[in-house]
Length: 121
Image (tube, rainbow, N blue to C red; front, side):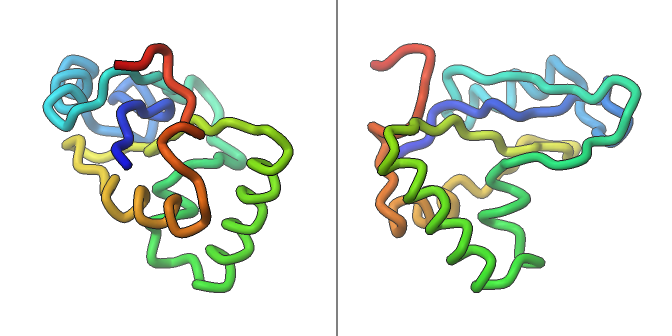
């Protein structure tokens, strides 16, 4: 599996992020991201976001939570859902642990074919 899109990025235009938009685009391209979405916060803090950094690779979430979340994603797949990936990148550099996210998604039966992308190679 190879994640090629990231639909949840933040530039320093958000109150809680530090990277210039130009650096974000360049950093994502260097990591093999072919399409992405910048989802900067404008004036209000976020309430809830479904993204790989928060739910999949964040060590603060318990294994039980990740198992339950995996069951939820599996249920959505069984209902015909496709998935878009968002890293929720807020850091000064584009350094997302896609390998851990890819392993998690594969472990719950989500394949690259289940990931939504603007275009395929």
